Length: 315
Image 1 (cartoon, rainbow, N blue to C red):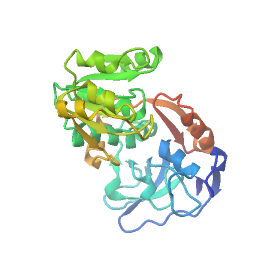
Image 2: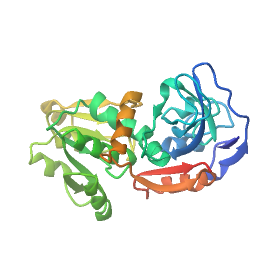
Image 3: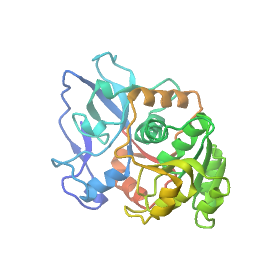
């Protein structure tokens, strides 16, 4: 089979198409022909050498959507499936054309949902759901702030929160991105380069829940929170360090949760896929490229330009 791998850390050019042995499924596995995967920031860190990967050569790809090749563990040949744990599969991650994934990690892709849509849900959807509901305990009628609304996680979080009956405000850096997130259902959009977000939201008594995807804006998230608000630290797109005023934090009784590696259950991922099938949720896809162009996809993600997920497809 073919796999896009790197044998040493470096620039995107270290990603090369290689012929590798087919994976041999274990007793708890399902053999899958991979049709699509995505590019995540962790892929870039692993390729650059800033995150450990274990044995080289290494095949990236955190998630994978594809077709079951043979009956196994309750799955039938020909079924379409998704895993957000492709890197734990035999054969490598989603940049490989075949993997043997744990049956317990697989969600079935409903009719009407493409492989590209499914992988765009994958890890981003799992993170959004876990942040909003598993850790954030979002309830209908509450107010939620989602940072980076045009990102893969942010765009799904907006839609899932709206579907759950919440009022949603999000951030954007341009009018183009603002228009995009409004179409996703955001009730209010704040251009953080032109407006004082905390001041704008504090006048409305703040928000009950914040999905903090930037990291360096933690103080702004605390200032934007209502009394007894919750802030879930999801990511650090803006940096790993933040300075906070502990007095405002203490007086507001804001609860800040370190999200860790946020994943929800396979059952909840299945629910998101069903919402996509019902057209209640639309995964935001920035670009679709052949997996052979993984290096270009890495450069594109590093540029910060994409709005949504970059999907790689296997021919």
